[in-house]
Length: 217
Image (tube, rainbow, N blue to C red; front, side, top):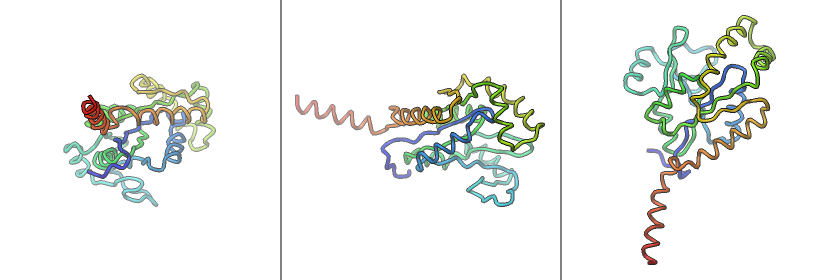
């Protein structure tokens, strides 16, 4: 087990939202706000693209190796998307939270549910980001200038299915003002870090107080 210098267990911070609601921007801001927070590096069976580095952008695995990890409970969550497997390796996340470091996940509701139901689920903090309106969501997707009209249409069609799962998250934020939403997100993370479950040394401290009380009696 890694040395824990923070006197607490780390969190698995899950951010989910439909495309265009601001999840990626909020993720980047969180990472800038607290450099000790790390982003979960997914594993995939697809081939590396030009410029991608193994272990930095993805953990690139052969399909058999990926399936072995799934069978051995080595993935917190996994999915089959467009002919390839994607997943979140468990070992580096467990090492991080045992050493008191938080890990950020930018995943959909299905992946979020798998993590919440995993052996590390008690240490999760899940936050869903809603857009202020569907009209605004579409405006943001068009404003990014990254996708064709056909891709935007497909993202909009998928957005309702994603939004329909908002009720399964610990917190839900309506991102009508990015700065205010980020402040709310920081407050949520800060408060959850103080959750009793995340502070394993509280039991020892409470017992020490009890011993002191008995000695003074």
